[in-house]
Length: 458
Ligand code: GLU
Image (cartoon, rainbow, N blue to C red; front, side, top):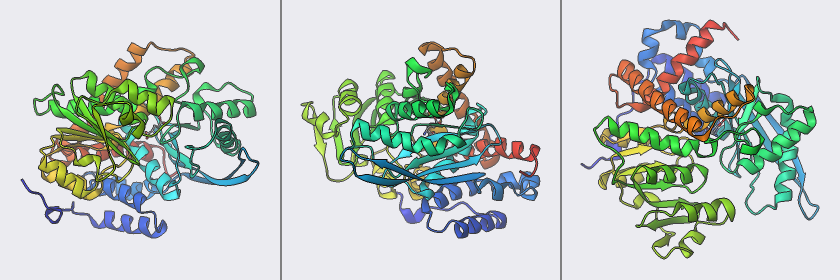
């Protein structure tokens, strides 16, 4: 079936939703990704607001779109040659109705306030879907770790936390990693926090190393979770992952563990990418080699292809041009546009599970939906990472450590429950259990809205 971008029917918006969207755009000019994320959620809420006029009366939408607190700060640091740099740090504490602010930190040159607000907003619904009692926040900086020495990265992280620490706390705001923030960066930030407050407050950060109060399965959780979600979606059509061919975009933490789990469950991942290009490896991506290139050597994906005779490195076009049965976009926002979606649909793609946050554009999502492709939005499909962060917080609070098997099986169970909850809400409010976009937004929204109602006008 050929689906054209012009075939896409937008969801009808109520007057209330239209007014709120207009106000969000007016109050945050130029923050396109934030507007996109808000619109994706609000456009699904019509049937919920009809059934629950008390949400409209209590101005839940207006309050939800306005962060509780928003921090921007200077991060000065000195490089190895003695030169001074000034970056900008952010932390958007979006919503604490369900628990302390919780969400990662992203270090990337493209980071600006709009990016962090979009990510923080997504986190509200994602965290609510986990059912783990966590509120939502996000932060980061326009600092770019690649090419910087260990010492420079440490000094940057220390400077970042020297300002941010006063806003953090295990009951207040708990950061973790995101793009280009992993266990190394979190270690430097945890060390500096501990030094300033003079407390080993394990629960103030998640994604810590296993030897210093971290949790088993946290590193793998986002990628593994996205594959579990994919498995659940396919099961609704009587299909499983065995014998399928997959494309995974990205080659960072989320992508690596999505590939690992897909292989374990019988799907061959034949391509992955980085910002320079992509590799096609018909024998299946060699995960051990990929880990060595990306995690140990911190090198480019080109190095993977150079070391693997069956792999080809491609710099033209997109990884989404590679024909496959299932796709896991695990790189970054808006990486998969409607032209990629059209190509994938032409190649007969069955399902898409978003490992990254909002990697598919609104038009791409609409095309997948029109073509009957199962589409798992990031708020549900990639919630395994933050859910396992909540498991790490539980272990920290009890001063204990669960086995890898126990933590991994809890993650699997949480993903199953997120999938079921999403479908239930899609069926109830959107009258289509396959409408995972509506189901995830509504499933998260109702939990947060009810808590906000109960807690009064704050
Ligand atoms: N940055 C991840 C996300 O997008 C993880 C957040 C966390 O573990 O707090 O959900």
